[in-house]
Structure formats: structure tokens, C-alpha cells
Image (tube, rainbow, N blue to C red):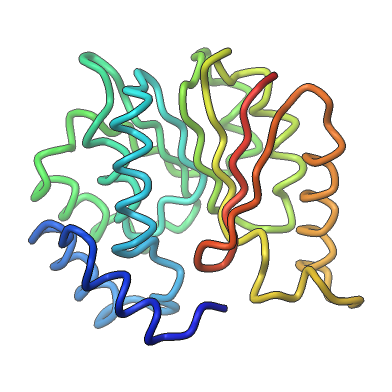
Length: 209
């Protein structure tokens, strides 16, 4: 993990998050269990920049949590586009909808509740950007489902792929093993080009060849 002083320096030398995102961050830390799961300032800023560069029409997000990353993804989609975001935690809907409305992005966001494994096959879209930040044990299964739905110019981002550095170790932990298998699966797939960035807890960037 990157030392706190380096993270603080990075945040202090990056464009500040919007007031709405700051409020959402505070609400998440005050009201929601495991707030560390939130994308946050640095990663949210990266999502905004990637969105600005790609100008995606359709974005798929697996794992909405409180919606910080969702709002960041929605900011730079093309005219008439949508961010389809999937989450199975119904208890977070009130936070998600409140801050999506405050951000002015509700009309760009299609919030779906349920099991992503069931919902993804029903989506008839070609996605220009896909962000995976859901249950780690299913990353490899998600990858198999979403790769055929990725546009030729599209990109997949998979979060938490370093898993606090545990992926570098021999382990019996099921989540760590699942992420090790996912990382190897992607790296061995000759249909894609990938880059594993040591950003926060690891971010895998994937595009089709």
C-alpha cells in the first residue's frame, strides 16, 4: 500500500473533488459500514479523466456502493448515453439516489438492483467503458460475461486486484486466490492488452487487441 503521506500529497496536488462528491464522501464515512470501499478522490478523478478521454456512450459499473464512482463515470459520457450500474445491496439505495440527484446526473444513470451474474446477460449494449468493483470472488466470471459486450475501442477497469498486497503471497484465502486467478486469466488472454497499475489497491486496465 502507498504510504499515507504520499496519498495526502497526491490529493493536495490534484484538482479538488466537487462539493457533492465531498458531501457524499462524508456521508459514506459517517453512515455506512466499510467506507474504505468507496472510490474516493484520487480514483474518482482517474475515472473522470478516462471518461473525458474516451467519451463513452454506454458505461457498465459492477458495484455501485454509495455511488461516488458512478457519479464520476457519468460526468463525461456522450450525449444520450447511460451509466448502467449494478448493486445487490438494497440498504444503500437511499444514499445512492440522494447524491445522484444532487449531482444532477440522475438522468444519465440507470441504477439496477440485483445479481450482476443474472443482469449482465440481459444487457443489449456495446460498452465503451466497464468498471468492475464488486465481489472479488466473481471477477473471472464477470470478465467472461462482459468481454463480448466491450466495444472495440472500449476499456475495462478492474479495481482491488492487488488485494492489500496479498496476491503476491501464497495463501489459502479464497478471495485472494480468486484475484490471483483473475489476474493470470487476463494476463494470459491473447485477445486483450492489459496493464496492472499499483494505484491504491491495484487497478487492472484492459482493452481488446
